[in-house]
Amino acid sequence: MAVLSNCTCGCEPVCESGAIGSRNWNVCCFNCGARSATFPNRTEAVMSWNQIIADNQEVVEAPAVTSFIDQAIQHIKAIPTVG
Image 1 (cartoon, one colour):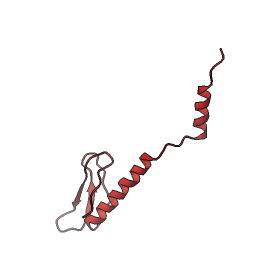
Image 2: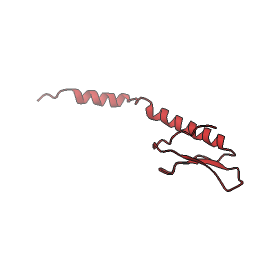
Image 3: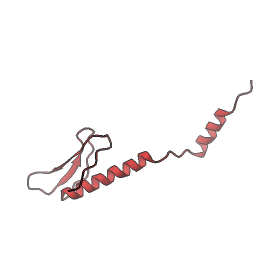
Image 4: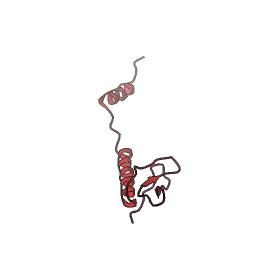
């Protein structure tokens, strides 16, 4: 059975099926309301959720890239004023 990754908000999500006898599974976080798409089985729902969480963590952990303009502004601010 696939292990369910915690939500990006830090809480533990729940993988649940739809109506009794249906083959509709999704993952949801009761803390922040995040919800996966619906899948025909639990494994697909969990794998999709985990991939979304992994993708979001890569975006959050990626180094911030400052633009040339931002770098120029920081350089100008660092130049002492002549008074």
